[in-house]
Image (cartoon, rainbow, N blue to C red; front, side, top):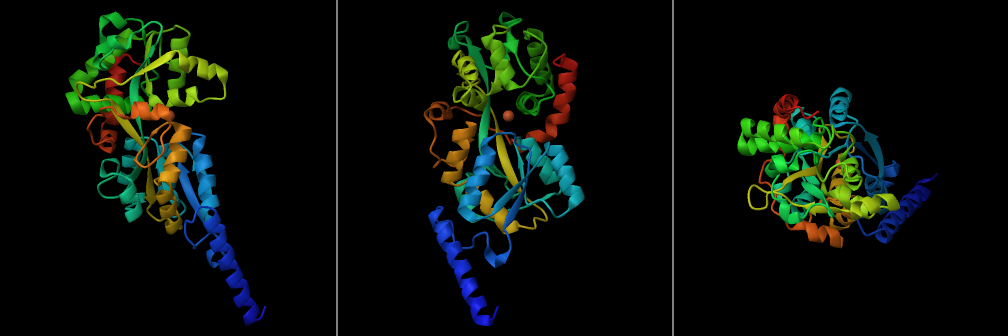
Length: 352
Ligand code: FE2
């Protein structure tokens, strides 16, 4: 190829890049073919929701940047990042404690993006920029609509009352969600009160814990128990499910936001952090900016039924009806430091 032809080919590539991008949402001209090298971003994710793949596809369509998803538990991924050094670009997790673990393990670096800062309120970001929330979720009490009136419910603590004996459902205490919940009680009320609560719930359980949050909803529909502790978004996903069986279960269940008159409902986050040695740093930042943008957030929450961190997201009616509630005012990531204590307290409580 002579010099002139090379120049023409380059110009053509740039033009394809520009028009390709403009038609896919006008995200800028430095598309995937920049420099002739295929653009990628390596995402190490502990999330397990179908919508994430749709989000990454949409991001690729808009930018030309391919997303490689590497899945694992937060601990596995952090360890992998530590051993590999420079392969991961973006870390994704579903618990503030996991984001804290990644930060404290030294596998993240602060993300300098004014766009992300503008799109995500400070309450959902690490003050030093090591991670940012992309969605929030609340851990609530759900109840059998035909056997429990919402007026009978008030707080997490009240579920330890004798009148709930044999009626409470919850997943295993080994779950990160329950550990963060108990950690929040340790922070709010101290270890003794947190221990009394765990014991009280263990005493009132309708059965030994089995299955995830969805399984507790099913157990309510099957009349195994009357109330359960679970995350809001599972109910949203079940109501929107293509599986009529799931929808039927969710239709029988009411959602109650506890502790509105006291310390607030327990909230947690899904979040992301820039890998310390990210080889595709700019692409990772662009993905972070996309995930927190109104478009990305709208797609995310309409699939996962988590709450958006960007108020400009277009919320489905169900989420709008749930959105306004008092949440615990706690350093969510800091709760990660209390997980070990929570595990010890659970162990003593008899909550398996
Ligand atoms: Fe989940």
